[in-house]
Image 1 (spheres, rainbow, N blue to C red):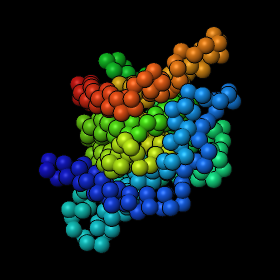
Image 2: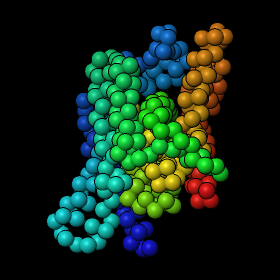
Image 3: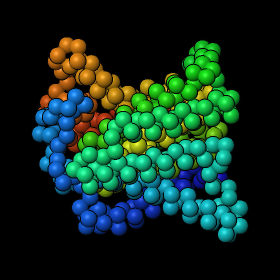
Length: 352
C-alpha cells in the first residue's frame, strides 16, 4: 500500500516542483516578447461587440501574458521524461514501480494532452500575432471532432466498449453510437474551457476535477490512470501558484484545450471500460463546467428566440462580476463549490 501511495503522489510532487521552477524562466520570455493581445476586447458569436466583457476585461488583456498553460503540460512532459530516464538508466526497481506511463491506461490520455497543448499553442500564437484572431473556431471544432471520432472508434472497435454506465441500473447499450456520443462530450468539455476567464478560477476548478477523477480511477484499481490524473493536478497547482490574483499569466488555449480534451478521455476510461460510471459522474464532479456551458447555451438561445439576455454576460462567472461581485469572491466561491462537487463524486463512485 505504501508503494501504491508513492506511485500516486510522487509524480504529482515532482511535477509541481518542476512547474514552480519552470515558471520564472517562462514568464521572463512571456514578458520579454510581450506575449499578450495588442488590442483588448472581443466580439460575440453573432459578431456584435461584447460590451460587458470589454468593460470588465479588455484592459487587462493587453497587460497579462498568455500561454501560461505551458507550465501545466511542460512540467508534465519534464516529469514524465525524468521518471522515464530514471527507470531506464538506473535500473532501480523503485522507479519502475512508480512509473505510470502504460499502454493500457495512460498512453491515450497523455497523447491527447500533448496534441491539445500543441494545437492550443498554435491558436495562442496566432491570437497574439494577429490582433486577437487565433485559429478559426470552426477549424478547431473540426480538429477536435476528428480526434474524438478516432478515439471513440478506438474504444468501440479495439477495446470493445459498447455501453455507458447508468448508476443503479443496467448499463445502457449504445454500440457504435459511442463514437458520436464521445464527439459530443469532447466538444462540450472543450466549450467549458471558457471558464478560464478570471485569475485563479480555472486552475482551482480543473485541479479539483482531476483529483476527483484520480480518486475514481484509484477506486477502480486503475492506478496508472490515477497517478496520471493526480500528476495533472500537481501541474495545475504549480500554474495556480502564479495565477492567483493578480495573475502573472493566463492559461489560454494551450492549457484549456489540453485539459478539456484529456478530461474527456479520462471520463471515458473510467466508464464501462472498467465497469465504472465516469460519464454519469461528470455532471457532479464537473458541475461548474456544465454550468459554464449551460449558461452560454441559455444566453444564445434566449437572445435568438426571445430577443433578450438571461445573464448580464455569459458565461456565468462573468455574470457574477458584472452584477458587482469582486473577481476574487467569484474565484473563491467557485473553488469551494468545485471541492464539494469533487468530494461528492468520489464518494458516489465508492458506493456505486
